[in-house]
Length: 323
Image (cartoon, rainbow, N blue to C red; front, side, top):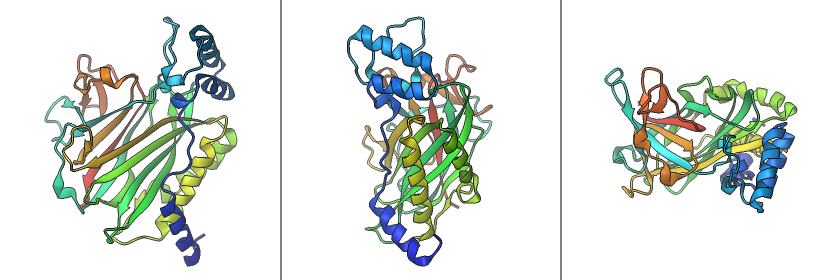
């Protein structure tokens, strides 16, 4: 696996395959398929509710579009496929009790980041509700493109790690290095995140290898193509692809985020700071101005009640310039 010839072959393979062949997240499945997944996971109660809802609606629609006819039962938040993208700017510590969150398309891009090396860290993985109950084993995959010294050549990278998270809480992480030295192209950078709720016990055992130093330290990038990176990336991609297709495992969040310098309001802009991707029911009804970042405890809370957190699953990652 570490041989020079093998590395070269893997590099070509990974370059051609930017993304693994991942199944749809649970919200994008038909409601009956989602119910089947939940049955495999042992969440029989919600599976039965979905089957009842299908009969009452007289339609097996996409799970995210399924009308929920049970006013006394909460809607499973993992059924949503929409994501709202917010931005938390850099600010002096202790300068203010709260920091405003802005839509990622409503900020000014920092053009000085073109051609620069940046650091990406995973700062929050909030599991408000994933399929099942108790402690979840979550496989997290983060994809990015690395601009090489050759302006016509990019390198596809995957960072993969697993976390154990209690339902309704967050993973015990902050500033977890994902990519160190990621090179920004003239058009910006792009990211794709995918989370899998791993229920299969054998898969949970296999995930132990992801605690190795190779993954804990993130991917150390240099200004030239590093032949080791595609081997690690390809190995991680294969794990995510295989586990995501198991009946007992359920993909939950799946989003793509391109950060550029265009100033086009419908696109997210690249700037140093933190980005939030929240799995929400309706973008038209979502308003980031109703939420703030609270530096005192590092949480995103309601502007009207600083002890009330976001009632949805979300991911926070930060972008900073390498010094």
